[in-house]
Length: 161
Image 1: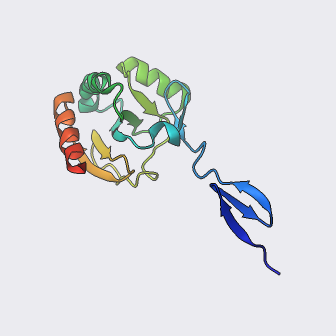
Image 2 (image 1 turned 60 degrees about the vertical axis):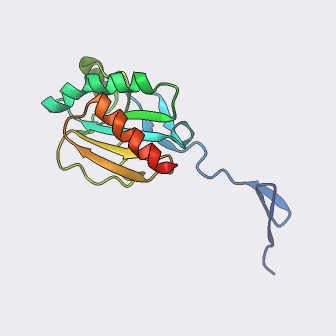
């Protein structure tokens, strides 16, 4: 005699017991340079600009001000600017490097490439644009500007409508 499965108001009933399914709830995509957890809920349904950088990369260092400016311009919109250290710096090392470079936007300690199926970075800097559906829309190689990124994001968003 097998158990009966039934759905009722978002809950699965197994043999008369209600089981609340929390798919993705509390999923952690890493921490930022300040040690704060980055959850699925905080990034869900947003456009993501994910920039890979390294302390030894001169063009990476040069574009940080552009990303800071862009993050400020996009505040309050469904867009997140995220940085990822190519060398995998963690904890205090990541915090120190981010502070020394003056990074104001969120920098993840854990590489999100697998989560958003980002191709391996062949050159630095590289910036990925991920749509609100979690699908990679664009890979931009080389140094970027806030104006260029904002224009490209607007084009991609326009294509959504």
